[in-house]
Image (cartoon, rainbow, N blue to C red):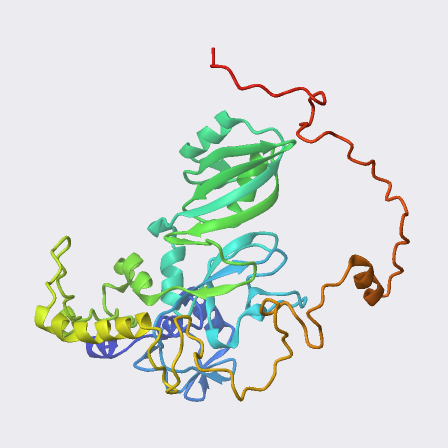
Length: 398
């Protein structure tokens, strides 16, 4: 194959990985299994160059154009598998994805009993970039173990260790807290080998009963709810993975353009107000024009003998001062104060017995004792002093 042909296309495994079919290693396995077709012919080798995705089918489905690279954070639930299909019919993380996510692949794997952060992407090359041990992307976990924790043994994990012929690189493990026979640890690894954390803890004599991944590289689980999925903002994706996008072969949405402040509407400047200044003097000519009107109103209210609006003269108390001739009788009698005599009453003086008789109560019989002792004190006798004792003048104060 000539160099011109090599420059015109790229390997089909790489093109399908960018389309989100899977990693290049996964695509090569699919080709070996006979699941990939090109222009109606089954491919038998991944050493095929293509210029576009037209005419390529995987499992009978046509592959669309390469979309913009996207990355999602997912809070994987405990008891779910990180696989697209399970022969036993168990639940997978892809069964719970919303429809708008589309076809995605997982970045790395979490076993069935591990929970926490799982990254999903539509770009197989990005998944491969984050998975490669050579890139040393840090993964952080919170681990609950059963057994007695030896902090000296945890410290030695920084030098790495070999278990059953498998070498594990440097591991940063620290004791967080102890709860009875259990303890919480924080563990950070960079290789991400299969069941790495569990095997290392078992080598130390500890049983892992809960494993939560909290960070994968620059991405964290945060406050993401159990089973929830959240899209990583494209600006953040471009910034934290600048080395991956620097070749320019992958596209992400351009960062939002900065607005030009010079074109913004400017608010009007507030009026300046001088504090503590003197009041503006009033116009004397204006006050002079208003004074006669106020004086006239005061004079009208003070002169109560003047004629009111109705044209009737009044006395000093504002009542009509004309004679009462021709008025309708009010029932008041002569010789009694105004307002005390009722209608139909006479001016005769009534005795108490007469008043009680008029009120319906029986009159007290004459000569009946009232129950009060007679006042037999001599005239001029004061209270609390002996009768007949003269009251002398007060002497000077001592």
